Amino acid sequence: MRLTLLGVLTALLGALLAAPPAPAATARATVVSREVVFELENTNATSVLCVPDNQGYEVRGRLVGPRPAVAGHSGPLRVNVLVHDLAAGSWFWSLPGHPAYDYARQLARQGETSLVLDRLGYGASPLADGDATCLGAQADMLHQVVQHVRSGHYTFAEPHGDIPPAAAHVVTHGHAVGAAIAQVEAGTFDDVDGLVLMSWTDRGATSLATRTAARQSAACLSGPDYAPLSRTGAGYRALMFASAPPAVQRAAARLRVDDPCGDVRSLSPMLATSNLVAGQVDAPVLLLFGADDALNRAAAREQQAAAYPTRVTTRTFAGAGSALPLERSAEKVRATVLRWLRS
Image (cartoon, rainbow, N blue to C red; front, side, top):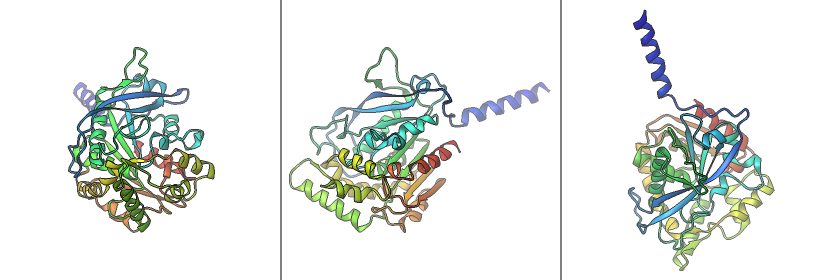
């Protein structure tokens, strides 16, 4: 009888250790946001053909989640690392002044903890020379971030004597080119527990997407080391949105930024590598699309889902464009992500 009971207890313990951590209880937990700092090397250990400057930089972000989780008092922790697109920044996942479209904070209200990054060259992670980095290096630096999050080897910008939490599980969420960065990181380094890829296909760019990339590349060739994805707010809105409230679209258009030309010039080799490493992704994948995405052809969605050798879940949202966390279907997008995370 004792042996039987011991066996049952051992099996239950093993199941608990293997399972992903449950989100922190949120009935009374306060959501907090704290700035964090990573010391990273701008290197490229991926197969993306591009050359960064191989120098060290500070990359900053915000840890957003229930207070106990951010303080490291919630037990085994899942951290969702949010990776933005071109022309964007951390604001894309935490749009100021529009709490209903604040992806990170709304996930935190449901018990999830997220790291909202400004990639090198964007927002709180400035880069003086936009030619000094590239998308292969962005994937390499994402790998470094994942490792630091797992080990707790990063700092609060205002430490107050405490240290950031270490994650038991890491899931990367990427939007558009940010999704390509997350995919290349996962396929190259095999160190994440899941991928949420929004509005991304390796081989399904529309003619509008191709023309936009060509114009931005031409701007970089003319001399500056940063170049806009779209020269006007109206142009940016046409690329990103199909149904977002006008105030949300205007806010996003005001916040858009120019891109480092090293990132811009490495987009073609990034596409090629992303396509190749899709077959090396072992983590489960959630693919999310807008039915009215102006940048990805609808016919490419099934091809993208078939590219991974792992479990893939796909969802398309009616009436939505590329910027899924900011479209009218944002609540449905978050609900889909939460169900998938907890499955």
